[in-house]
Image (cartoon, rainbow, N blue to C red; front, top):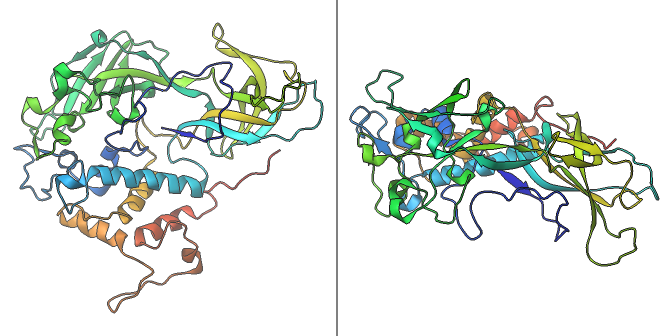
Length: 439
């Protein structure tokens, strides 16, 4: 997930960033890409994840205590909430929360953020430039890259295992060999296979999606390392065939049938590429060229205060040999730049790969549920909980009324009870980041 701040057409980077992998222009992803996974959302609400992803088994039938099977889209089961609606509202909740607290509820890549710089006349001698970036909890400069896919020949699928002893083998096991020890486990990602007309049922349903694509990522993974071998445990409800979930006549999927699941998946190495971090911009270059092109110079980031997002930037040239920057001794145009573009990784730390901080995850889920348009499943506990969050706290009725304090009236989220609860939890100094003065 990246954010692009549009600023017009600029001269390309001297150090060209990797071409983003994913959905090509004009293609629509099946669900919005979110920081909070749908698996973690279902766990917070107490939903059976197998039912939430549209399936059932003899062990966990549709006639169970909470028996509703969720569909991918509204039109597949009119009048009920769907995974697509939930994913859209989760994304909106994450954006709203980030705008209030000043940081993202889980780390992500921020792409092409722009900042103006104040010129101080001629500056042939280099001076370090300090910036307060838009988003807090800065980790490092860089862009998302996925250039090193794990070969399919290095992936072996074993038999599914029943880890909790309930009679249903809920974990698929994949063994990945020859994995470099330098790779972080959180950098190993899995996606559905790319579309091929000869194997439609086991692939992505978007023919234009290639390589690593966040829209088709399977998460979260449970990973264990032993030397150069990594074992990935994947809940089987994440491996249901997309073609079955997105069918026009979609029905509850039989999870006892092996044909309901894809035959294999693809693993990728997704990492932070530090070769692209900063680009300085001059509206007019040293030759007094008054064309519309920007004069540019590359650079890098040094994190000064990660929480309030203060960084120091300096011009420099990246070297693949040492995986480092050589700092330049002067500005290429002899003056302080007009503006700077920044690429960086920032956000709240994750307790485990693919998992959002548990407190923040609950707040995202509450905020998303409070905005649901359609009712959820018929499970009594879940329905009562969500209906309570959807209650309009600003409306008084004969049966009940809510006492709204002045602080609640300043709530930027809205006046559903869930929105008020989230605002009360976030509206404390220890959880919010003020906009620091540039130093």
